[in-house]
Image 1 (spheres, rainbow, N blue to C red):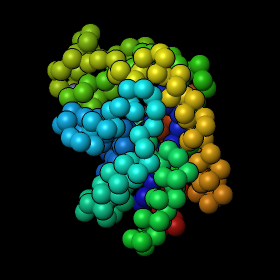
Image 2 (cartoon, rainbow, N blue to C red):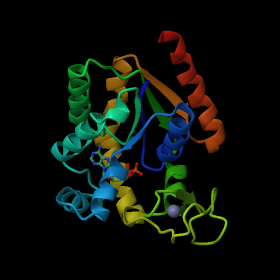
Image 3 (spheres, rainbow, N blue to C red):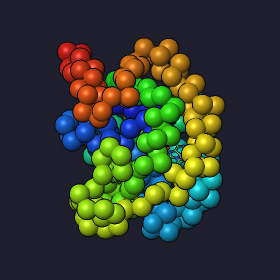
Length: 219
Ligand code: ADP
Ligand code: ZN
């Protein structure tokens, strides 16, 4: 199955994406994670992407599309994937449609996570991440067992630079202006479903699973 998860920053995409990809055994393709890895490896792409990321702006479409196209053409994507954080602009959505058409593939389902703005701000300010293994925590709702330390790998967890308040505001504006139009785009393609992301992550996941389960009959 070929899935896409959408939602504002802080909507809980990453958490749901992990649960989905574990349950359905498909690769998790997160543009944000890919960029963070490139930045850590200090590659040319990483250096360029970082200039935009630290300001809360979108990385240019051309670079983003090229990075994701390469990833989607790796063998582990042959039997499906979950996209998280891409596409984020109409231009990226067109590029994705073109790439999939070339490979004779189609998206099966686009999951839109709806979350209120207040909750988004609360979640992002409490979010902590482990840069070593990619685990995410929330000081309010999902703290690590030992303060400041990643449960999974023992590294220190941090507030992402782009989760600082000013940058968050910018990212929310970017979402409203550039990413929200994708809701209509996929709704017109009749593959969009809405899931309530204001719930706790387990209840949200139950809703997600219901929609994915409905796909089975179609394959
Ligand atoms: P979040 O979903 O919480 O905003 P991500 O990890 O998905 O965080 O993205 C972090 C940053 O990486 C974004 O603010 C943006 O600068 C950049 N980025 C990620 N995906 C894309 C994309 N598809 N297009 C452009 N920039 C992107
Ligand atoms: Zn870790």
